[in-house]
Image (cartoon, rainbow, N blue to C red; front, side):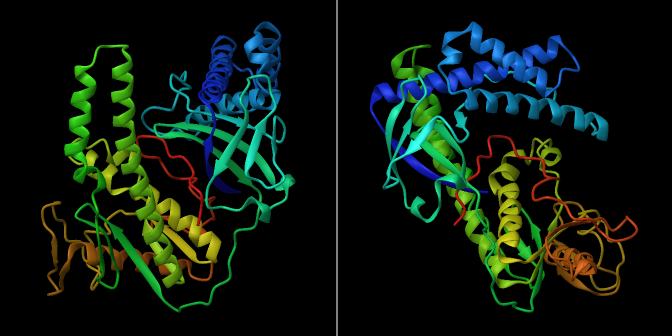
Length: 402
């Protein structure tokens, strides 16, 4: 699936109708979660039946397209299934018990409830919410795809307006010539990453550089009266600053990942558990600001697109082991130079990147995304992109691939 995103242009009444559709979508999802809580063991079929009952009971739910209501049920069941899966896997800590949504920002339609204009510049929503015809503005050209290739249409509300996302079923693979190069990457806070060749990519630190402006807008929010129009405006301005930071971080991760993938046949990186790392309150802000999750997500996406091998390596002892002799040299985070008894002296991150690459080379010949555990016996097994990842705090909306 490819996601194409366009800015939606309409009237104030249409924007209000979109908000109403989003609230209804959230209402159906939360009602399904409540039904599951009251009827443990209820499956997806029972939730679909409950959705039918909701449409008969509430006129505002019936006004929403039936397929959109079904997607709300699917989202609720996804949260439930994830919780059960985490319990079966005995994941330590919280298992992700399904929660009620308080600030949902999207509503999703399947193949009905909308229609595109012949020039693909307008989209009309045909349910009874009153959204009507919206102009869509963007750089992508939907004329390259057939209507039946568009499997989902999503309306998204953000601080700077409303967007329409099209989920298109299409082949994204591109054939490029092999380079004969391999590389290992060690991500960090001081430098965005250090590779096995000694090259370092500077960390832009988008959040840190925008903190002064964020604090200014946060103070403006606090000075306004609760529930007032001026407070809502101040919150919106604060949200726009956060949105700009997240977009810059995502775009940076995308550009760097694309460059790395196109320049190498095999890319190895650490299989980091971001959710666990941010529990360190001293480093949580810097870790989230670095955007390691976004970088890995785009590495795996472009690896699939360009047919490159991407290998996730267990990070255990990659910083401590000597890449020259294999001896373990334990060191604190403040020690930035690796100095071994064998006389080998190297930058700590450079040494770790070499170890990551050496661990990954055992899986050469396999194409796709692989997870390598040096403590496991036998061959590695393929995983779906992003399957083993723990997302960072905050939403991770899919952006349009280049």
